[in-house]
Length: 91
Image (cartoon, rainbow, N blue to C red; front, side, top):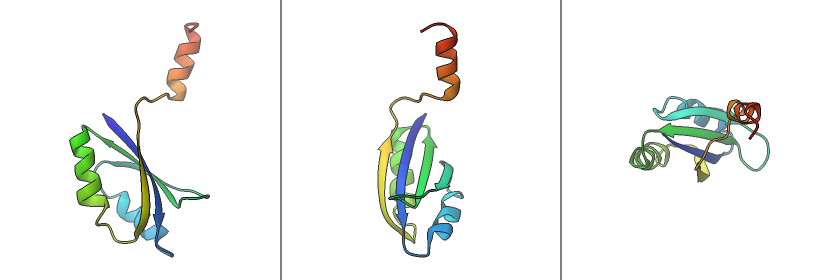
């Protein structure tokens, strides 16, 4: 599983429209509206790097209302569940 985090700015007045369109795209796991430098945080989860490239170039880049993005590729996931399990066995 490949996970990517996209930090996204929408065009003025288009945040909700872009968020609603994003959640309909296969491979988009979650969309968060956030405060700060970016308007939305988008979590992508796909089977391979090839699927990630396809998702970004064929579905997200042509999407209207997106002004700017920064894509981060996740190397390793540390969830709260993983951390609790590590501390429970004394690591």
